Length: 214
Image (cartoon, rainbow, N blue to C red; front, top):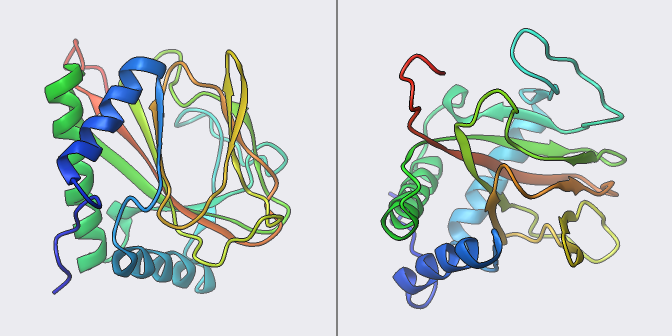
């Protein structure tokens, strides 16, 4: 049985640091965010899904109006809800739930749920500049990306580019790096990958004001 993951060093302090960064600047980057054993299992899962053709091309747009446009978005995905359960994904979801609780306790965001999928960009793929929240649905509140590339080297591409008011920051997709940012206010893109680039991408969603709003 895989051990329950902890953020390194003072785990609670690291979670609070993420919350503080969100409050101050709207984004946070944490390196070595989860144990190497857990990261290795998650990376293996993602790459095994890719090798077995279980990851499908991602689309852009809302449900019912979605289009697969590789020139805009080139990743292949599979939602964790559609994957066989395993210790690694259970441990990851439990770690994310601790982060959700911390964000609610410190920032009063009312985060209610977490949706997440594996994502793999093949060589040559990227994702053009965008924000993560749909204009007509305000429920996605905080975006979370965990990178799973243990062999990543400079020049491999696939950096996360954050478009900030003071300029751009490029985040290497190195295994264990956790990017957390506000879904509605931070434009970002994925630069073209030069080798396969694996990650877990997710969103904390808040409770709807109108319970009929999905």
